[in-house]
Amino acid sequence: MRGTLRDLGVGAGLFSFGESSILAVGSHPLGTGWRVSVQHPEAGERLAGYRLRDQALSTSSTLYNGARKGAVNEHIIDPSTGQNVRQTRFAMVQAKSAALAEAFSTAAIVHKPTEGMMRYPRIISLDVFKMSLAKVTSGGGSYA
Image (cartoon, helix red, strand yellow):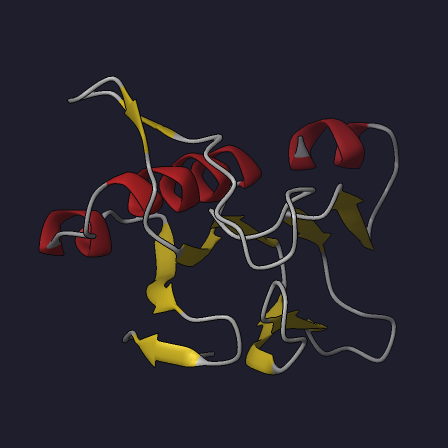
């Protein structure tokens, strides 16, 4: 995607792909990375902040996403069981490509991230949270 945009003459920009994925091409006009905040899908509190430059950020969640507030939206399927993921989880992945960020954020909802996932060379950060309606109940990782 970034290569196509560059071929079209786009040197810098911040592109949103719905509510879950963002691609940053180049730098912000002020010379810094593009500032992006991620909020709790229901409570609205800020969970993390990122500065993206030639990177993507994707989030995946079993919360809300058009479902009744407070309900788990069972739209992600665990391929090992064929069942919908029913736990309340939220994942954020910062990566060198939009496709990787999207794939890893969904995979992190299904399976607890492994050290192998974290060492994948194009993954910059990966955070998964088990969530309650109002706050993060457990999680980990560092924020850029």
